[in-house]
Structure formats: C-alpha cells, structure tokens
Length: 113
Image (cartoon, rainbow, N blue to C red):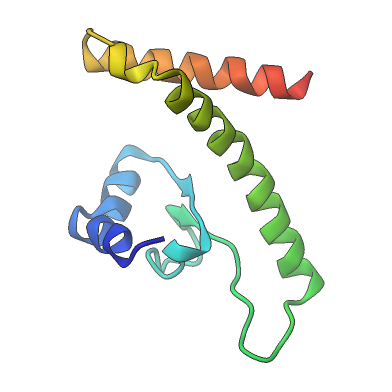
C-alpha cells in the first residue's frame, strides 16, 4: 500500500463521506489509523502485530475474518479487471454502479457454490 493512497483518502475526507452516506468499509492494514473513532468506525481494519510481540488469539481471529471478507471482494474485482468489463461500458455512472453490484453478487454466489 502506498502512502499516497492513505494521503488521498485523508485529502478527500473519505471517512467523512462514508459517515455522511451511513456507510462503512473494510480496508487493509495499510489504512490503520485512518479512522480514529473506535466506537463507530467508518473504516474497519485489522490489528497490526506490535514489534517483538504476538497478537492475542482474539485479534488474530478478527484479522482472519477481515481477510476472508476482503478476499471475496478482491476476487470479484480481479475478475472484472481481467475481463475488462468496465472499460467497455458506455452508459451512465449510476447504471455502471448497479452493474458492478450485480456482478459482485453473482461472483459471491459462484464462490459459495
């Protein structure tokens, strides 16, 4: 993860925009610290291992659950990129969003089989 990605998120106030929309997202460990509201996070990340120490079993489990959830999405986006579906679209953005959502659901159904 590049520092420029987290800086872009801060610059564009991603956390504020997510909160306005009533949304949250799961992100990789590179985005840890982006959202400091532990009680109601808009950006959910796993736990980093402290230097020279091990993570407790509970935090390891949280990291595994987050990784499993992210893997499904990453897999779906990889399929979209490989098929170059989005580069061929010539339609309104709102329809593209619906198309991506539908493709993600179909991909998740395919993985669940």
